[in-house]
Image (tube, rainbow over all chains, first blue to last red; front, side, top):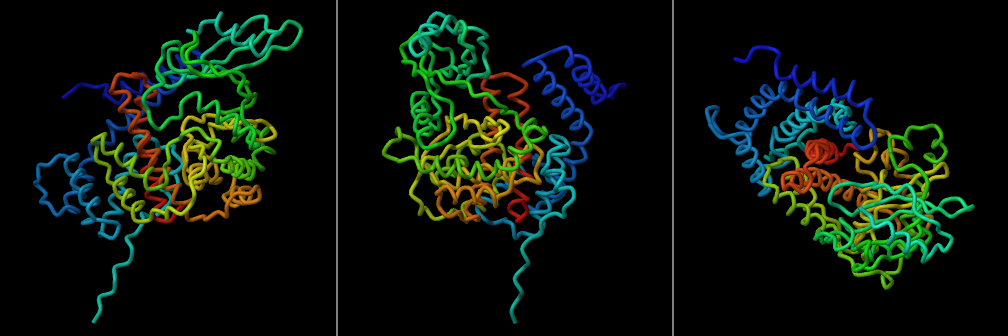
Amino acid sequence: MQDPPSAAELVRAVAAFLRDEALPALEGRNAYLARVSANTLEIVAREIEAAPAADVAERARLLALLGRSDDDDATLVQLNAELCRHIETGSIGADTPGLLAHLWTTTLAALAVDQPGYSGYRRALEEAPPENPPAPTPDG
Amino acid sequence: MVDIEALAGTVRGFEPSSRGIDGLRRLTGGASQETWSFDVLRGEAPPLGLILRRVPGGAGGSPGADPRKASLADEAGLLGLAARAGVPVPKVLAVLPPDGALGAGYLMSRVEGETIPRRFLREPRFAAARAGLARQCGEILARLHSIPLADLPPLRIAPAAIELEDYVRRHRSYGWPKPVFELAIRWLRERAPADDITPVLVHGDFRSGNLMIDEQGVAAVLDWELAHLGDPMEDLGWMCVNPWRFGMDQHPVGGFGSREDLFAGYEAAGGMRVDPERVRYWQVLGTLKWGVMCAGMLAVFRSGEDRSVERVAIGRRASEAAIDLLRLMAGRD
């Protein structure tokens, strides 16, 4: 176990220095890059805090979508690659129960880290996840 | 750096009153084409603002191997054709020979105005310009699309299916699974518009950020390097891609206007009748392209070609495209 300050606290302190102290003393391209650097460190801080829980939840959803058991040891990248293959070949698609909700939740979690100010994200937060097209009515 | 003597000599060729070069500064960085701004001193007459655009590194520099990009000489030719068609563009004043001291490229007039979207989308002094901008963009695109094919330099031809598969290949080459992109690829493949429109000259990057805006509206259309032959609806759809609204997403066209105004301007200036569904298809494809481009920035960073924080950080903007794609496929936006 690492003693405090936490990694997120350290990174936030550097981001604050860049934004509040270094940036006003710089101009032109260096000022721009200082702002980009501060934003980038804030991504890192948010990821340190949010990713562990988000990854666990994403993994559980992927295992369910792919019909795998809970104790499967595939990595998240491997599970996502398998989901991509299914989508590419059509064996999983927009009409597969749970797919759109999974992608919506996963994308919102990524944006909460990457770009929480992005207009498309702000809109999406106010919306319900897209629904699968209605299942065809069974005949007979 | 730029060979000032050679630059001054070239300038004297079209501006005999030139007394020297002042204020030379580079506007763009990185490994793409170089853009420099400078003033020509003319004694009693006011200085003349010019732009130099040339291959990276100048003399002996290579134009790069991106087959998607038009050559600088072709770009200069397109600016001349666009001007004749009534598209506001900088005036090309000299085309630089590839074996010259400045490297391949061209000199053009520097158009004054504002390119930074967060300024012209928000500052009150542009309010009147903004009100007419969507219609004006439609009119400009109609004129641009009317440039006779026979006049054009050789350009790549990319109707929707070719453009889509080009970006699918690029995405796959990065080797990182993105299920939302995969779903969008399927969506786009299933809905590819009929290849029934004669290809026209398409700007390829017509959007907020590549337009010089003044208080009257569009002063110049810039950044022609992605020009190609394709579906005219591509340019209309690209204008509607969400990142180009720069946060002002209540205005679907570029953060300043409505689709209705864009389409009305396009049709009034002689453009073909607009099929909104086809424009929307190109908006979805454009959104996927933006997401793939973001991932491509990471590839450039990892290759060592550009190790800037700016370059690597854009990689994280691919998630913007993911949420936009999910919303678009759900019929939102």
